Amino acid sequence: MFWIKNGRQYREQTSQKISWGHWFAFFNILWAVAIGSRYAFLIDWPHTFLGRLYFFISILGHFSFIAFGAYLLVLFPLSFIIKNERTFRGVSVIIATIATTLLLVDTEVFSRFNLHLSSVVWNLLVNPENGELSRDWQIFFTPMPLMLLAQMLFSRWAWYKLRSLERQKWIRGVGVLLTGLFITTHLIYAWADAYLYRPITMQKSNFPLSYPMTARTFLEKHGLLDKQQYETTLDQEGRPDTPMIHYPKQALSYEPVENKPNLFIITVSGLRQDAVQKEKMPALTEFAEKATQFTHHYTTGSSNNAAITGLFYGLNANYTDSLLNHKQTSVLIEKMQQDGYQFGLFSATNFKPSIFRQALFHQMKLPKLKAKNSQIDNQSAVKNWQVWFKQKSADQPWFSYLNLDVGELTRQQHLPTEAQEQAFYQAQLTQLDHQISLILADLNAQQALENTAVIITGEQGYSFQKTEEALLNYFAPEEIHVPMIVAWKELNTGEEDKLTSHIDVVPALMYNLFWVKNSNADYTQGHNLFDHTQSPREWALVSNYRWNVIITPNGTQYHIDNKGNYQKYDRTYQPESSNRPPLGLFLDVYQQNSSFMEK
Image (cartoon, rainbow, N blue to C red; front, side, top):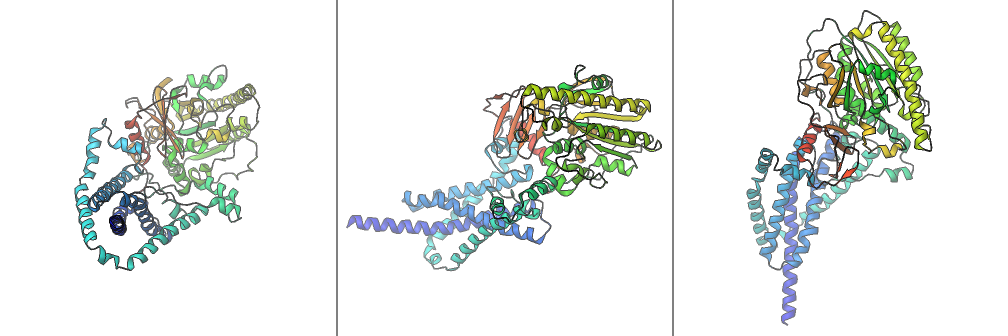
C-alpha cells in the first residue's frame, strides 16, 4: 500500500509540475515576444504590407516555438527528475531569467554588429583587452534581478492558482494559433525564397536561432521553379537576404575645382602582384617605376563583383549584394556625371560581371551582353578605347574605364597540367603587356598624363589548377594580393610598402581630385590611399557572402565565417593552430561591416 500511495503521489506531483510548466512557458513566450519586438526597431523595416505582416507572424511563431521548445527540452524532463516542487520551480525561474536576459543582450548585439550571440561574439563582449566595452555590456545585465523577481512572482502565483488555470479553455486555442503561426512563417518564407520576394527574405536573420525553411529543391524537382532563371536573377540582384544599404550617409559637398582632372582606371582580372616584373611585363614594370606602386595591396574579394565594389564604392565586399539589389551607383561616378565628364567605358568581357549593369553603370547605355560562351577579347577592348581616346573632345574632362581579363581567358583553356597553365598564363601576360604599352603610348602622345590620374590594378589574382568552385572560399596570396599602380602628378614616384586595399582608392580620388568636404566615414570604409600623414592600416579585409578574412601587415590571415568558425593562416597560407582569436580585430571588422547598413 505504501508503494501504491507513494507512486500515486509522485504521478500527481509530476502532473502538477507539467501543468504548471505549460503556463510558465506561456508566460515566457509573452516575455520573449515583448523583448523580441525590439528587433522591429533594429532592422530595415519592410516597405510592403506582406513584408510587415510576415514580421508580426514570424515574431509570434518563432519565439513561441523557441520558448515552448526550451520547456520541452529542459523543464519537461526536469519535472520527472526533481521531486521537490519548490526546487523545480526555482530551477525553472533561474533558467528562464538567464534566457530572457541573454535575449535582451542579443538585441543590443544585433543593434551594434548586425549579428546574434555566438561563442565568438560572446568572447568579444567579455574581452578583457577592451575593459570599457566589457563594462558597457554589463549594463544590460542590470535588469536581471527585476526579471528574476517577475519570474518568481508568476511562478508562485501560477502554482497556487493552478486549479483555476487548469479550467481555462482558451489556452488550447492560443496554443493551436501559435503553432499555426510557426508553420505559416516557414511556408511563407519558403515561397518568398523561391521567388526572391525580398521584403520577406531580408528578414531571414532578424531573430536569434532563426533558420527559415526553404523549398527550392522540392520546387525544382516538381517543375515549379526554373533553376537557371533563379541563379541568373540571384547573380544580377544579389542574395535574397541582403539588407538595405545607407550610402552615402550624408549628402556630399565639394570645393570648386578650376582645372578638372581626368581619370583613367584599368582593371585586369587575374593580374597577380608578382606579374609586375621586367621578365614578365616589361612595359607595365617600366610604367610602375615612374609612378607610385603600392606593393602590399589587396583586393576586396576573390570575385569580379567583390573587387569592383571595393574599387569604385570604397566598401568591403559584404555590401555587393545590397548594391546589386538597390541599383546603387558610386559617389565617384555620380560626381563625374554632375561635372559633365566624358565617359569612355570598355570591357573585354562585355561588362559580364553583374555589378556593372545592375549598379555601377546602370544609368548608362552599355553594349548588349553577349552569350555566356563568348570569347574574352582584350585586343578589341583596347582598340575601341584607342578610337574613343582619339575622338573625345579636348574641351571637357574625361573618365575612362578599361576592364581586361587574363584569368578567365586562361581558365577557359582547361589545361591538364600546372606547367602548361603557367605557360599559357605567361603568354597572356605578354600580350596584355603589349596592349598596355599601346595605351601608354597614346597617353604620352597627347600629353594626357599632365592632368590625368592613371590607375592600373588587378581585380583579383590567379591561382593555378583551381576550379571556380574551389576559388569561392580560397584566399591565398596569389589570389588576393594584386598590383596597385598610380600615376598622378601630385604623388611621389617609387614603391609604397604600407598595407592598402581597394577600398582606399575612392577616398583618395574624392579628396585629392574632386576636393570633397565630407569626412571619409560619410561615403567609404577606406583610408586615403595618397595620404602619408595617416597612421598605416592595421588590417585589410577580404570577404565574400560567407567569409571575412582579416589580413595583417605581416601577411597573417584570420578567417571567420558567418557561423562563427575560425581559422588562422600564416603568410604562406598554411593553417596554424590558434586557441585565442584576435578579438579586438574581429570587433573592428564587425563594426565596420554594419557601418552602412540601414536600420
